[in-house]
Length: 222
Ligand code: DX5
Ligand code: ZN
Image (cartoon, rainbow, N blue to C red; front, side):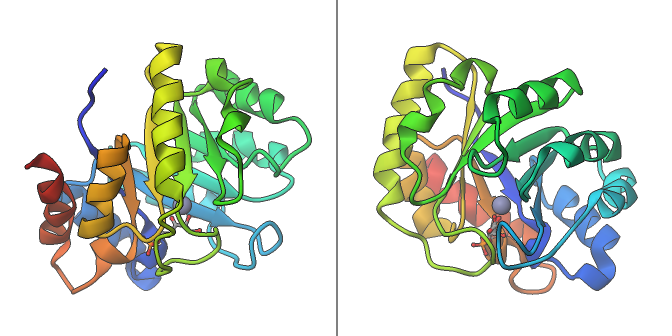
């Protein structure tokens, strides 16, 4: 099944001193979803956003919140993030003891569920979870920071996962996160990605967000 390419700007690269305005600006610039990177200083060596901040920015856009949880343990924060306004919640399979149960909890709370594969994670991890999934997120950098370089070996994994989604017959978004710029975006799409997260490539240059988002799409529509 073909779906529209979704662009999900990562607010990790936004100006945190003016977060509300930044959200409005990327909404206006054509973002399809808003990617929110939640880091706990434990699962990854960086500390970012909690449910209170998600709740505070919820009123600034009606676009779906695509919440990427890089936290361990993860279960106790599922409900607070759903209550704060998360639409998609993606978890790392090694973040909690019972991944399948966590995915079910996300769905029981009314959000859509995603699984995140680090560069070192084998694609077969989705095989026993696929019935629960609305989204698969392939990390093309090691999680923790924005502005890193795209790891090209992940392209083959994107292809494998696109095949798995196709054979499942399910409507699952295949999203790529890390080092996505207009050039690597093209490689991701060619490999079967249907959604792209981009932080530095969207937020670079004051006020150029529309142009930056278009640049990610343009190469992919030729
Ligand atoms: C990394 C985060 C990414 C990051 C992407 O752990 O999951 O979402 O913000 O940033 P760029 O696009 O700058 O690589
Ligand atoms: Zn992310």
